[in-house]
Length: 141
Image (cartoon, rainbow, N blue to C red; front, side, top):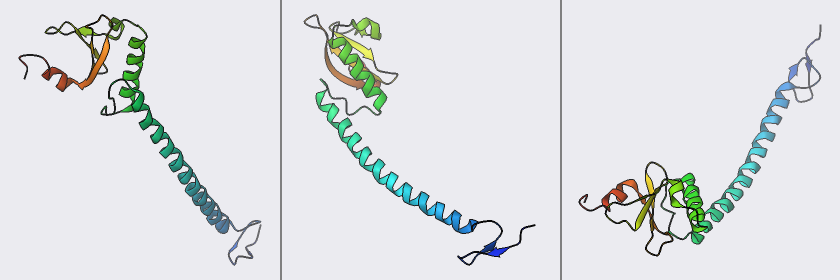
């Protein structure tokens, strides 16, 4: 049976090293590593946010008011595909009843992209919430 001994740090115990000092050392190392990781993440996060904000400058219509990134990505995909000549029917687009030159394409349950087709090719007009989109219909105000 092993006997207790006193380690150079002053603690006593069984084994080859002081487990208490080893535990505090690993906690300190983890805290130091976490601080450097936080600093690195913070700098990476700032550059990612800046790049995300700069992407809004290239959009043909303002998309910054959309609430989450997935809606912005979906809107950009739709705008790009229709810009390349894809038919708006494949995105479940529908012409409005009161103005047949306007096409509404749903982004999700709550947002719509409006396109105007006066010249034949659809060009984006704006992105509206479903509530604001319903307000554009005559007799609904």
